[in-house]
Image (cartoon, rainbow, N blue to C red; front, side, top):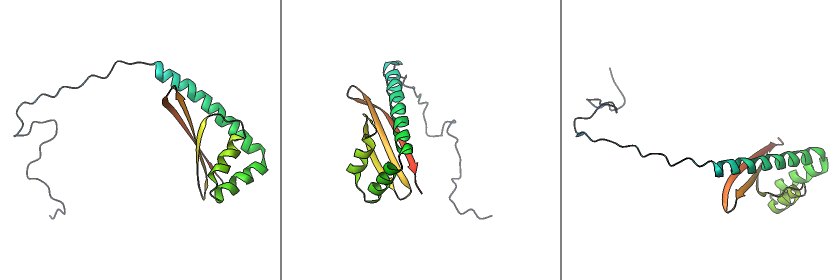
Length: 127
């Protein structure tokens, strides 16, 4: 029988000691102490992003003119106009926008102090 790949003559599973190992013991590093403060603050900030995303989607959904302007600005690669149109809905969060022929990607960011702690990516298709 022909095997197209090289197989070693001796197989030593990882949980067995190889003939060349000499009783090395491996110690596992302990995890750091759990601190839930930042995690909980981040969750609170994300709730705010979700509310802003809801407001933004309602704003786009309610206006055919706005939807048309957003699509035209994206097709013309006018990122500053896109951000301006999206901010007109009242969004206060830091945002970044990218676009493809199929739709619009909106990334909302939140932070606690100087620490970036949450991102929310919204992808809306138009084709």
